[in-house]
Image (cartoon, rainbow, N blue to C red; front, side, top):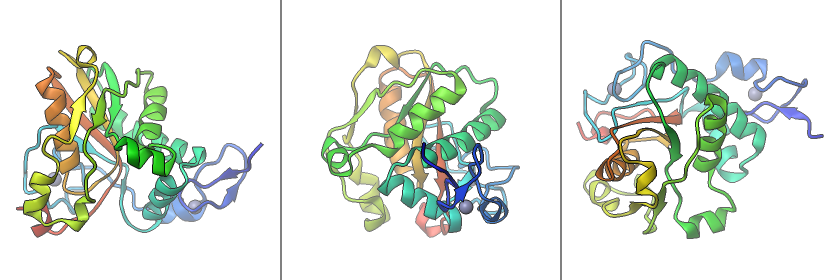
Length: 226
Ligand SMILES: [Zn+2]
Ligand SMILES: [Zn+2]
């Protein structure tokens, strides 16, 4: 038996607890009301009403402070308590913001096979599987990444917009056609990656694509391209 740990800071906790009191107090939760498009709080949203190939995105946390620490643990270690903690918060946001939507499957933004081998796991897939489990929906890895990419944050806005063209492919079109898809990733920055995945899902006939990420980076207007 492993001790229970806070999924954000790693501190050992009593059984059945998953967030320490300090993180519960200080964690950068995204509080409603949220922007209908980017899912950030209306006070902090800088998306300027920009539309994407996905309908909306929602996230339980901003990618700052304690949540940033948790995301780093998720990406570097893939610990089960980290995955479960984030997926639990994501499930709550999905129920609150997307309640009543007819999702037929949960899928995730894939890593390139080389990136996955280097890391040993795919953090978005771990989140997607656990979230699907909590929502009682099937998880299907229907997307694949066919070209490795440079991290989006190293690129200018112009390079970013071209960096992802043709990078993703749908492997099981029959699972996507006429479906409403819940698309999972760890962090949303500009939304370019989610956008490209949603575009591919729609090319293969998905009716609507809604996104959920564990955390949302706070952007300046210029970084958002608006
Ligand atoms: Zn903590
Ligand atoms: Zn917004």
